[in-house]
Image (cartoon, rainbow, N blue to C red; front, side, top):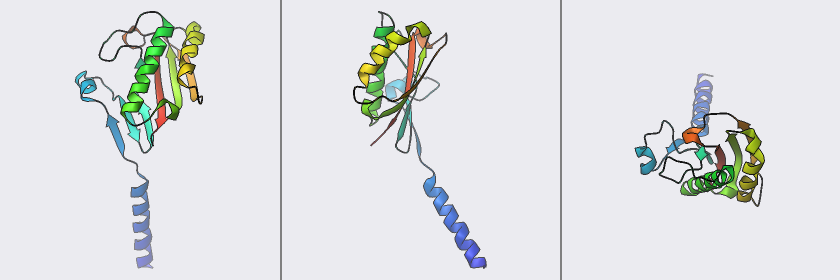
Length: 147
């Protein structure tokens, strides 16, 4: 009986060790030098979780000009770049969260957003709130799978 209990305990321990997935906090050297209080992305198993992106030119701290449409396009380009850097793609995005400064700009944001998903429509949530990073009108975070 004692051997059976030891065996079952050992088996449970091995199975629990195997089920724990490695967590990787990802950022480029350039991103790390910005000393942000968050990672660019986090990988858990075959999932990639991106931090929110805004419509800035990478490396600059100002959003592009031209309104919500231009900002959304640049935001989505930034998302695409981060996804590809860490082994994913727009085709592998499963969920996005869109944060808008003004909910009245939802339709214009959405018109640009859908251009980046011609083959599928990820699950999505959206809400409005003031005070987005660096004065942005839109911030979007995405979750994607990795091959």
